[in-house]
Structure formats: structure tokens, C-alpha cells
Amino acid sequence: MRPDALNGVCPYYTMYPLNFPLRVLKEHGKRGDWVIDPFCGRGTTNFAARLLGLPSIGVDSSPVAVALAKAKLVSAEPAQVVASAKTILKAAKEPTSFPSGEFWRLAFHERTLTRLCQLREALLDECSTSTRILLRAIILGALHGPRPKRAPSYFSNQSPRTFAPKPNYAVKFWAARGMRPDDVDVLSIIKTRAERYLAEPLPDVEGKVDLGDSRVAETFSDTPKARFVVTSPPYYGMRTYLPDQWLRFWFLGGPDFVEYSQPEGQLKHSSSAFFATEMGRVWKNLASRMTLGARLVIRYGGINDRAVEPMDVLKESLVDSGWRIVTTRSAPDSDRGRRQVRQFLSKPKKAITEYDVYCHLA
Image 1 (cartoon, rainbow, N blue to C red):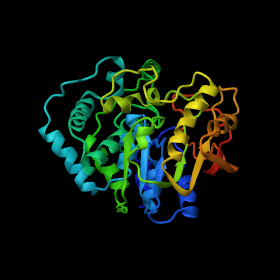
Image 2 (image 1 turned 120 degrees about the vertical axis):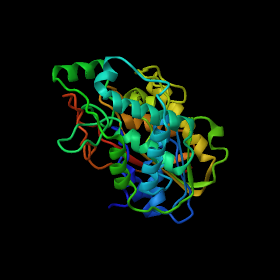
Image 3 (image 1 turned 60 degrees about the vertical axis):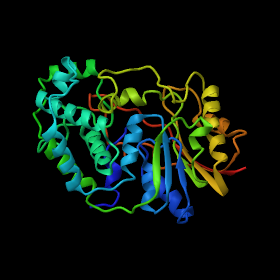
């Protein structure tokens, strides 16, 4: 098994490859250097730091991101995770909350959904141990995805695995093809995934992940002085992180429907200038928490429906931030590794070129 298996516990459509932070930290990092990612997403930078024995801090405004990133910093045996799930289901009663409607009827078999609701309620009640943190991440990763020809590996009817299906479209898709959800063995899927992601022991390294707003200076008030910031902030115009993850958000206590309003703590996209100003607040906050010789490395790009040069937005955000751009390099092919085809017959457009931007404290 690969030592980086845990990094794949639950994919995002917007995730960046592990080799990006690994390369940066291998080239320049030394044991004991703290690493910060103020837009940590699913914790790829934090996991890279852990593999290299570097302590790290992650911050994100998405509860889904934080739940996944937390799992990248803890350890448990596969058998412990399975035993925890068994204990929860053995003691569980009928769930107090059970979503209904055509989408839920076609998305999950009734018995499968019952077990998921029982696990959901138990983990909402208590999820502070390493075992439960990992169990939660494993369930989030298996919550929705394609139906394989062999043993089921997801709980849902046919779905994308990197973003949640939108209810109206999904119902039409399933109904037109006569697709009904399978009554899957929830514990078997958890066991298979626990053995896949937790087979290799990982180093115990200091670190934490917080749900918070990196634009707020107090977010970093207790953060140790760091030598590296390695991050990929939201691209201007990309505002659907939580709606795209609405099913996983539901499992973490969110509503059982898609909510499109922009939650608190996320960067505002009212204009590119305002967005750059908001992002600049984050860079300024970090500058005050760094050691001498600190480096900021940013992977940045854009989306096709914004007529703005992404690098102009990023450069504007760095003005008067305390950071100075030293090097800018085009990242490897932006389409590489995008194996998750949008399964409801939609074809993603070719990605805009991404850049790795290296900065030093001014």
C-alpha cells in the first residue's frame, strides 16, 4: 500500500495534487518548520507536511473541508474504525431525522439511508477521537459515487464522486434509465475503505485544522511562527464549494437540500477588485505570523466564465500585503489528473493555465 493513500479518502473536484506541496516543502523545508495553509480545503498541504515530519496549521471556512483535513492529521487502525462503526450501529435506534422526497428515495436504498442517518447522528453527537474523525471522513468519501460492476464501493445510486448530484437533474437521470439504489452493506464498504486508506502507519506530527475565516486576524492569534505558507486560494468566480458538496454537508449537520446562498467566512466575488482586496487581507494576516526568511507559495488559476486574467487578480491581492513575488512558474498541465468526468453526461471545459507563485516577506 502507498503511504499517501489517506490523502485520497474523499476527493474534491477542485483538489490540487499532493506533489505540489510535497515538492515545495521537500526543496526548502527543514524539520521543525511550521507550515500554514489558510485555504486548506481537504488538507493536502497539511498531509504533505505530515509525510515530511513538519507541523502544520490548516484553516478553512467549509465544514466539509475541515472534516476531511482533520482526518489527514490523525491515526487509527482499520479494525478500530470498523469497530467504532459497528458499535454505533449496534446501539442505534431509529434515527430522529430522516430526509424524504423523490431524490432521497432514488439516491439511497431505505435501509442504507437508515444506517447512514444512524451514523450521522452518532458522529454529530461526538466526533473528537481519532477513530471517529477517520470514520467520518471515510463515510464522506463513500457517500456518493459510481456504481461499479463488482462489489459496491459507494452508498448511493449512480453519482459523481467529487461533487454531489443536484436533486432535480439526478432524479430525471435515474428515472430515465430505470436506476434504483442498491441495498449496500454499509459496514463492508467502511471496512474496505479503512483497510485501503489506513494500512500504512503515518508519522505522528503536531498539527491542527480549524473552521474559520482567514481574513480575520484573530484566526491566527495562537498560531506558532511559521516558515511556510503553501496554499491554493479560491479562484475568482468559483462560489459553489458548499452547494457542490451539499450531501456531505448534510452528513455534517447541514440541511437536506441544496442551499445556494453564500455562507459567512467565504471570500466575496462581487468584483475582481473587491475579491483581490479580501484575499489581500489573508496575506497580511499571515505576514505577521511568519519567521525571518519565510516563503509564501500560491497555486492559482481561473475559471472559464470570468473575463479576468487570474494572475492580475492575484498580483493585486499581494500589493501592500507584506509579500514580494520572486518567481512565477506555470504549473503542470491543468487538465492532468482530472479523471473525474462529470458523470451526468456533462463535459468539463479545458482548464485555464495555473501558476505557482513564490513570494518572500518584503
